Amino acid sequence: MKYYIKQVLYISAIIGGVLGAFSLIPYFMCLGSLIFCIISVITIIFLKRNGYAGVISLNDGTVIGAISGFIGAAAACIVYMPLAFVGAIIFKQPLLFKFNDLVFIVPITIVVFGMLGAIMNAFCGMVTAYLYEKLEKDRPEEEQVDFIIDEE
Image (cartoon, rainbow, N blue to C red; front, side, top):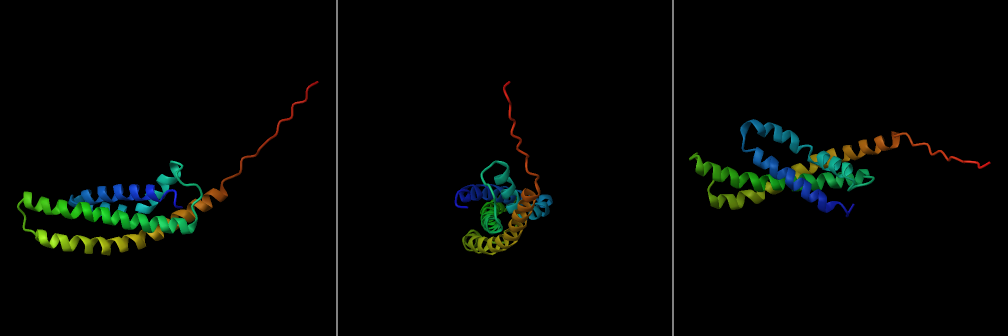
């Protein structure tokens, strides 16, 4: 478990940052919200496909899901809030909050959305680990055939 925590942090931060940037576009905001719910699934699939993780138990899937959900939400908030603030200044739209409020709002948003993301993604990570466990058990074992060659 401890061997791939660093990869989980990097992958979920990248996905969260991309989702935070895409959340500025109104049409992609709904799609980003759906993808945000499955950050842990994307992370576990990436780890399994690239050989970073071997067998992932239900506990590992839950922990990976909670970590990736929290880090993804934190990265999305860290990217989205300043970009929305700068975009509102550039396009001369009325600001919902001032710069001083930004310093107060961002940590609270990170904690609230991080906890929600951790709970959602912990469940999704647990389900993904369960499905991988079932798929690996149902995979037929390769028959090993020993060839004996007799010399005459």
